[in-house]
Image (cartoon, rainbow, N blue to C red; front, side, top):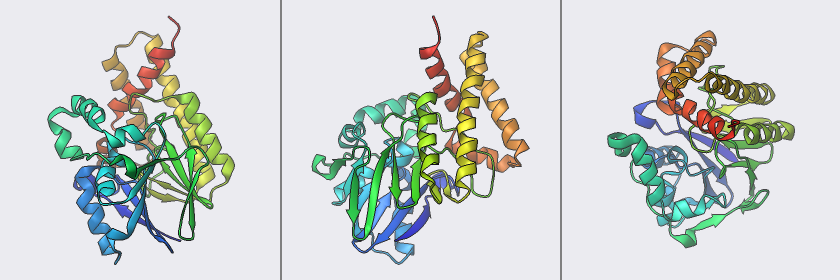
Length: 297
C-alpha cells in the first residue's frame, strides 16, 4: 500500500485541505474528496503522480461537510462507489438541504468557496457501520464511528494508520498548535473525547489529518487534542454562564485561540490560513450551541 497526500490548494492556499490517494493491487482508493471548488486540483494532483484517475473506484468520506465530501457526487457519477456513515448517505444522494443550509451561512461566498456539490446516484452510495471493512485489492479499509465533531463521522483505519477526518483536529504541518474543529451544529465534547480516547488506545503509528497531512507523534498529539477539546468547552461554558452575548463569546474565543497559537510560534500568515479553514468565530458558535443545549435552565 502506498499513501499519497494531495494538497487541494483550497482558495489557492497550501496546506489547508488534503485528500489521500491509496495505491492498492486492486486500483486506487480515495479518502476525502475535498469540496467541488477543488475538484480540478484533486484530479490534476492524481494525474501528476502518474496515476489514472479512472482507476479511482472506491471513495471514502469521513463526513459530509463540504470541505470533506463536496466533490463526492462527481466521483459517484463517474462510476466510483462512495462509502460513508449511515447518517451521511441521504445527504450525498440528495445534497439540497446541505447546500441550502451552507448557503445561509456563506451567502454570496458559497459558490466561490465550495463550488458544486452534485448528487450521488443512490446505487453508488454504500453505508458502512462501525467496524465494517471494505477490501480493495490487498488493502482492508475499516470504518470507525467517531462522533464529536459531527454525529455522522467516520475515521478510516488501514493497519496501524488512521485517516482522521476532523476527529483529531486541525494542525498545520510543521507547527505545534492544534485547532479544535468545532463548527456547528453537532459539536459534542463528551462524544469527542471518547472518540479521541478510542484512537489513542489503538496505538496507531501514524495519523493522516484532512487539515493537514501525516503526523507521527500520535500519542502526544491525541493527548493534547483531548485537552484542547475540554479547554474550549470549559471556556465557552464559563463565558455563557457569565451572561456574555454570542458576539462577546466569539471575540473571547478568538482572542484565546490567537494567544495560544502565537505562543506556539504560529505566524500571522499561518493564523490567517487557520482562520480560512477553521474559523474561530464559527467554532465558538459550535461550542456555544452545545453549551446552550446542555446548560441548566
